[in-house]
Amino acid sequence: MTDVRELTTEAEWREAYPVMDELRPQSEETFIERMHQMYDEERYRLFAYYDDDDIVALAGVRELIVHYHGNHVWVYDLVTTEPRRSEGIGVELLEWVGDWARERGANVVELASGLWRDEAHEFYEEKAGFERYCLTFKRDL
Image 1 (cartoon, rainbow, N blue to C red):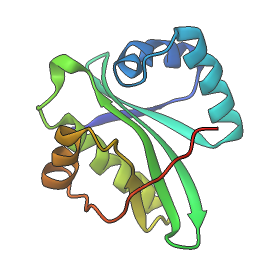
Image 2 (cartoon, rainbow, N blue to C red):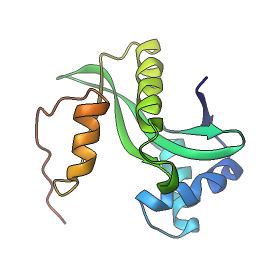
Image 3 (cartoon, one colour):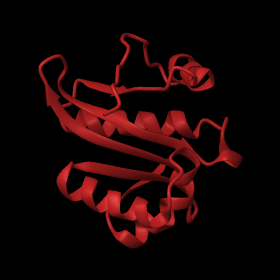
Image 4 (tube, rainbow, N blue to C red):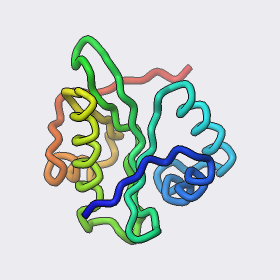
């Protein structure tokens, strides 16, 4: 049985920090400051996949409503700790996020992945059932 829990306290976020740091390297204090802001102001939610009492994967998501998808969930962060990759945990966590999103009336789960992340793209398309359908663009300010 998949054991996924929403992390809502600073103590839980600190427990999750080493796993998130594998994907988004930053100081622990910066991570905590951003979590407070994102959680309180941006409706960001952080879900942890546990194996016994150990966090082995994280998904950071937001519920959004936009014209092109209606109600949907955007996955900003998805990481499985390095020693546990290729065990299907990421797929299970994304399936859990999909169920969570569906319960809230979402029509789509969406994410972006860096152009250089070929292995991640293969994972999303071949294992997690996502389709490649657009590009995202940015301009540094």
